[in-house]
Every structure is written in C-alpha cells, then in structure tokens.
Length: 480
Image (cartoon, rainbow, N blue to C red; front, side, top):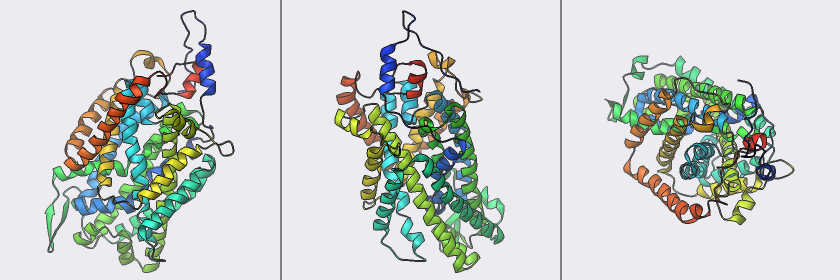
C-alpha cells in the first residue's frame, strides 16, 4: 500500500482545527532518519538472537531438556500472529510509545496505561538481566566481577544511547554480524557431532539425575512458552521506532515480519543443533554452550564464541537502552508524570536528536539493578510480555471499527480469527505460570491502576494525553 496521509478531519464548520494544528507543531518530535535496513538492524539487535540463545536459552535447557526447541518453535508460531497484530497497529498508530500508544488509542487511556506499566517491567529489568551474563563469557580472557561488569555494560550502553540513531544502527549492525557468525558456528559444530536422533525433538526428554531421563510433558512445554515468547520478543522494537522511520506505514510492517523470521531462525537452528549434539542430557541441562563448543572443536574456537557472545550482550544492552528510552520519552510527552518530570524526560537534544534525559533514566537505574537479586525476574518478565501481547491482540480485534476502519495501514490476513485465537492461547499460557510471578506482576499492575485512579484520571485534560505526532501533523487528528 502506498504511503498516503490520513484524510483530513474537519470541524463542524468544515474548517481545520487550527488549535490542534498549533498544538501538534509544539509537540516534541524525533527525527526520521532510518529505513528498513537500519530499522531491521536495530530490531534484530534488540531481539538479540545470540544473546537470547546464549544467556536465556540455557535456563530452558535445564527446565525442558530436548523439548526446548519444540517450545521455541511453538512460541514462534504464536509470534507470527503477534507480529501481524503489531504490524497492523504499528502502521495504524505510528508512535514511539509502542504498545501503550497503540492500545491506548484504540481501547482507551486506562488500557494504554496498564500496557505501559507492563512494558516498564520489561524496560527496567531485561537489560540488567542480559548484562549480568557478560562476565561469564569474558572468563576465557579475564576474570571479572559479574555485577560490576554488568553495571559497566549498562553505563556503556547508556552513553551509546545518547548518540545519533543512524550511527547506532550501523554500530549495532556490525555487532549483529558477529552474533550471527557465532550462532552459525555453534549450529555447524552441533550438527557435525550428533549424539541423538531428530525424533527427540518431537518426543522430548530431560535429565532426571543418576543417569536416567524422563519425558517432558505438555504442561511443562506450556509453562515454558512464557520464557520462549520472551526469547523471541524483540521483533516488536520496530513499532517503537515508527516515529524515526521513513515511510512508517510501509517500513514498520516489513521490519516487524522480516525481523521475526530472521531472528527466530538464528535462535531455533542452533538450539536444534545443540540439542542433537550435546554429549548427554546432563550436559544439555547444564547449558554450558561454550563448553560444548570446546568439546566439539578446541579451546580457541570456544574462546572466539565466548567473545562473540559477550559482544552480543553488549549489543543487546545498547539497543535495549535505545528502545526503552523512547518509551520513557513518549510517556513524558503524553504527560504520564508530574509536569516537571514530563518536561525533563520529553526533551530532545539538539546535537544528536536523542531523548537524553529519558536515556539516562533507563540506563543509570539499570546499572544499579545489576547489584540486585534477579532470580525471579526472568519469569516475571515472561509474564509481563505475555500480558502485553494479550492487550495488543485485543487492540487488533477493535482496530477496524469507527474512524480507524478507513485509515491507511497494513492489514493482517485472517482477521479477526488470528487476534481472537491469540487472546485465548496467551491467557492459557498465563494461567500455567507460577503463582509468585503472577502475584508480583499483578501487584505492580494493581499499583499502577491506583495511580491512574488517584492521579491521572482526575487530570485527564492535561495528563496521559496519548499523542501520535504524525497523525496530528498530517491531518489534525485530535489526541486521545
């Protein structure tokens, strides 16, 4: 579909609303500087296929054994439907606010606020979790304290996030090449040293101790889907970059779908190779991928892979800080906080065009969180991601009613069957998660609802006003 402006919205007197146009002109805006290639590099880097493979997947091997590949494959199928929903809503509501802007515009401010809070859980927790793996993979060269190393990675990522987005796209693209090389090398070595047949992928087993194995049940696979969704989650970054993409109604959907396809392949193929090539189930459950690489080859190759993984983690931290700062920037522009805070976080630097205060607000606390105990946070983050997907699917169900029906956007096939099925499956996945992770996430959401009722709702004329700058500038569409 060609990129065309929205049809004009006229007042009762058939004249443009000049007040809306003036307000739109004063709205802080980000610079459009990236296309499909740059957006795909940034989005793939946020998906961090190698980082997910080498940092998060080992935990899945421990919990699911040879069922890890099957669980990720099922999650990939779910993500196709999710990607369709993101592509449609991201082109219908192009905003750096991502999920909350899309859901809030289509379903109302309260729904948008709750989605924003779920995204904040991911924003604040995931980068430190990823960064904490850096020291382990630098161990072949130097032994470092994991927490201080992770904090240093977060501060480096913050400094990089203050630079121009176009420069970051190519810097992270170079790191991404190294990630893919490491993943391809692991896949080649795993397939070259098979220790079990491919039948174990569809009839999964796991280590039961004392040299015995046990079957992986369907219930365990469903429980593992939340983490698997988290592993593949980064493809949604494209919608956060919608305000900085040229021709977003064409490029956002392309970036989302291409990123999911490439990222899933980069993760799933090596997972299958590792599953088939691990010497035994105990080694597979331990998740020491670098150790397996050394067994399959030699120490030099193992060291190379470890360094590539370390670079993948640093790359992931940089891109996550970039993405997450845009969420904070957009929330301040939409007046989610007290006025002085909104003014600071919505400021865009003149030299690099980046939201520097929002970047610091994400990166510096992230460095501090590297010293916290984060054992439960992987699971909590998986719950938050699944919850966000439920809201996005619900938004897709209502995206073709009223004025939104006639707006130009990429439209998914098989609507409304796909979003309806997503809602049902994702709620089922959430139901299978641990009570502790559900209580923690639910408690945060409940506190956010109280903040909405006490602070935001009484100030709805001036606070939490969800903006879509391109819409306002192109057509004078009023804010939600």
